[in-house]
Amino acid sequence: MRFRAETPPSHRRPGNPAGRYAWLLFGSAAALAFAGTRPWIRVQFERLFGDLHGPPGWQSQAGFTCFCSSLLIAIMAMAETSNTTTQRAVRPASLLLAVLSALALAYEWHQGPGMLRGVSARWTWAFWLAAATMPALVAACGLRSAGLRRSP
Image 1 (cartoon, one colour):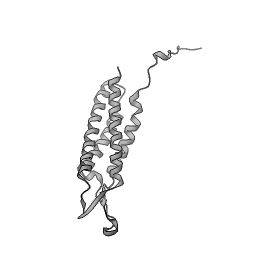
Image 2: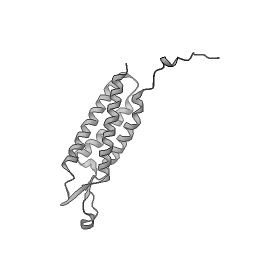
Image 3: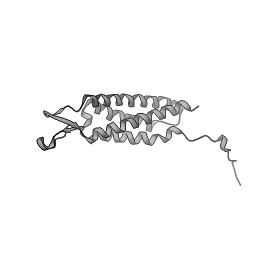
Image 4: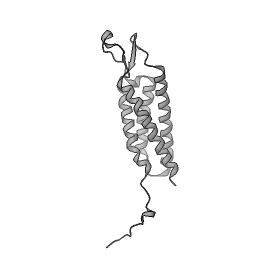
């Protein structure tokens, strides 16, 4: 005995496409925040000058921007509800923060690692992790924002 009739397949609403990108957003934001806590530069020639690392990434301008923006984007995504008003406020703001962080990181990469204690430096794995996860964060925010525009 059925209490409710099943809706025909033509009337079923597909799942929220923006919800699928939430895991990409949270994963890339967590990886970016983790990368900001690790040193972004190290001495280029370890055999000559020893294994020296620079300060954590969040102590640079781009690192602090990426670290704080990724945490803020994750917090805003967690605070988002199914209400359209909150989605219209959170998703474009997340995209704006992600794009500004990507620009700051691109500028940092363009400037190069510079010097560390008077010796030429190179990027560490943490910087490359941040550089690899930043496009994923921008894509997740962009896809979530585009999903908002497509929904009625």
